[in-house]
Amino acid sequence: MEISTLKPIIKVAALCGSLRKASFNYGLIHSAIQLSKEPIFKGLLDIEYIDISPLPMLNTDLEVNGTFPPAVEAFRRKILEADSFLFASPEYNFSVTAPLKNAMDWASRPPNVWGDKAAAIVSAGGQWGGGRSQYHLRQIGVFLDIHFINKPEFYLDAFQSPEPFDSDGKLIDEPSIERLKKVLLSLQAFTLRLKAK
Image (cartoon, rainbow, N blue to C red; front, side):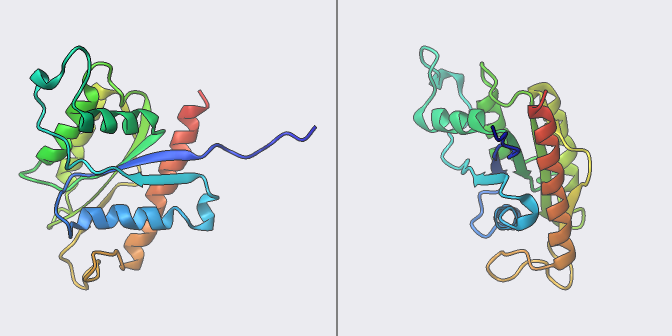
């Protein structure tokens, strides 16, 4: 009898903290989705972008008899079904964005659907490349029982010269593409470790 050595597909829910159509951070998610199809990942990563824009602002009055508004129910289901998470977190006023925090709060309502899963953070922005938002996101993750990879870190100055994104928001800077690939490899390995427990 032949025993399969194939590893399971890892379902990654990718969330972007910016709602702007031409967001650099969405560009990072788009690039991650394209990179995940490369042979180096052996077909193990399935990254799905989860749109957080339909979510209403958190208001527990919207919870009725243990149910949530339809957009929230659908979002929570996606988070629950995911094996791990990829956050693209821009930095607003030294912190995470309101839409991203709102999404995290909705999915943390009892029962918390974030718990005991791996995650990675990527950021693009000004001089610090969104890096300061990552530390706040990690703090939030502690309470929600999200296990972030520690290395490599990824933050990108979106306004450097030459520009790392093209006019369509696609990441074109080769060193940054290689760094993003390393983040995904680390997320893949860490997710498999957690799932094996």
